[in-house]
Image 1 (cartoon, helix red, strand yellow):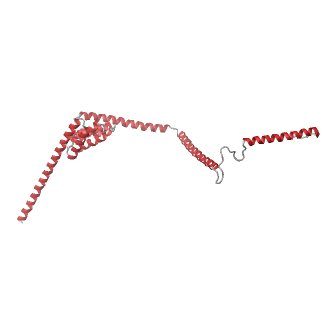
Image 2: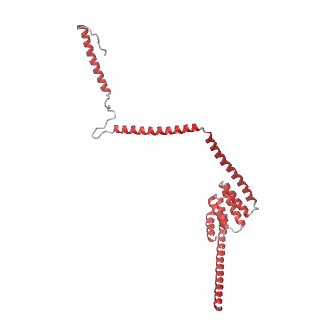
Image 3: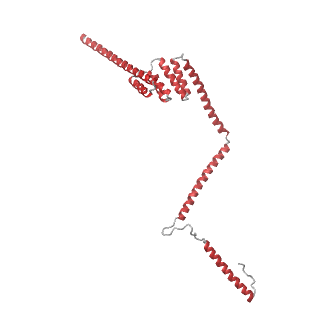
Length: 271
């Protein structure tokens, strides 16, 4: 029994030693990764100071991927984005830095700059909350306190403007005469109806004309200047008038002959 207990104690001790070695090895690897990450961050800082933004951005990204404990790399990359007015990217990096940071000064800077991004985007209420979080990590920072006061004032002004706009729309709607509004709606409905009826009528007339103009199968198409049925051409009218005039002349001659040779007509017709 004693031998079994000693064996179990030995195995437990061995497990604890192995776990301690594993943890120590993990800590060494984590420390090494953080060191490499910080070296890349320093290199990116140098490149950024020489206006080589593309190289600096790449090295900041490499530094971030090397270690999840390096809050400086995302913070500095966020600052670089902020200076270039890439506000969405800047906010993402400041937020990442705030989540990684283990020390209050680092958290304060991250949330302060998040507030600055919100101010740029005129999201003043969100800026107020970000500055409050920054002050929780560093209550003595006067710049953050000033920005908080400014954000509060702008947020209140923005709320008042939105309220005034809503009230103005409401007042304008209430000022409108209900009967006048109803008349406008009726007039609009009538116009839409008349427009629809007119369109239908135009389509109907167009179809009728198209059918009328289209020759039947086996018929010769009409020429544009050809007279339509039941209508006389100018030449036909002229011939008809001449025939009527000739007929009138013949009748007049007969009447003259009757005046000389025969009795007078009691009811002569007027032509």
